[in-house]
Image (tube, rainbow, N blue to C red):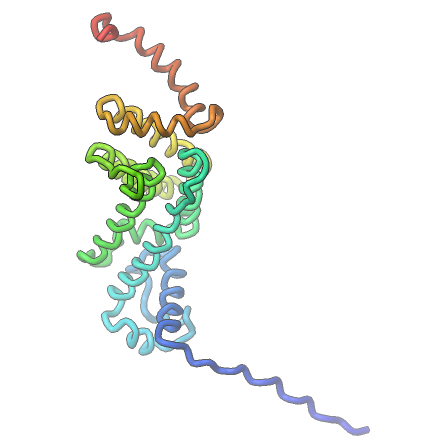
Length: 258
């Protein structure tokens, strides 16, 4: 009987990565680690192991060490987070915002500790660059919300005035703060309930600002004209109007008549 030696398995074809591909590989590995641990807890050795490369190679692309890698990862995460706020201008505005928040909260959920560390800065030294990156996300998010309100200043649209822009920026800050508290509280309530509350928060802020700002009042009227009766704005009105009516009876007569 003749035995024939088995042929050795074919060797994997090695492909040299381009500079941009290698950098993206290292950033992806770093973001995977930052997603569940604070940036200052992640070493360059761990990034090298996760990427399957040597530590000197990590330094070749990020000679500034962990701080430079942190800033690059923050920029990459910021780009991804900014995309969460992009939504086609179709359908009722509050339902568009709900879809935006679904994506945003999914990002927060998936990146968990990394999201907290990236926004809070961890114990990595904060720089003007990291502050600029994070603030850029906030401004881009505000612009997207204003776009859904018809006040971004595009073709046929009016630019947002100071009161309206301040209100939207305040809401973005509240969304960020609520997300961090949500993580601290073990992601309770669930994401759907948090999203609904944040949409209600936006509507309530619009209504409160509209009471003293004509521009916001016009935006509110335009928004309500596009809403469905059973949508977020309609449901909130059903819940809030009885509460406000009951509270009005508790006000002094002079205040109620003003």
